[in-house]
Image (cartoon, rainbow, N blue to C red):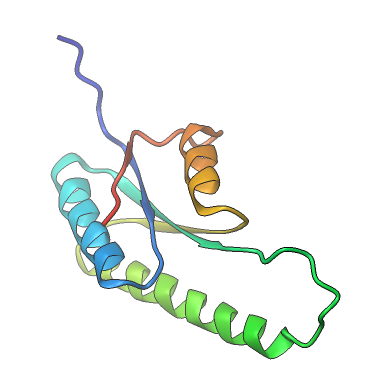
Length: 112
């Protein structure tokens, strides 16, 4: 049997209770195998529109995303886990797969 060490865990975050549970599980796993965690938040981009005036919505969303990431980083740090953050734009599933298979090559994805 081939055993592969888990060293990088990807956790999609969206601020929900389920994604919080996923983060907590990832922290438990990371502690047991010495892995780092990368949290990813995907901002879904709306279809192109001539309507402008979403600046305040965009600003509020950016503030919310930063808070979610900072809370996740704080929780991971309390358990001695290194937490990296990625913020992506576009389709959620596509971005998760792209990150998982990309240059960083994650060993595990934990979703809540």
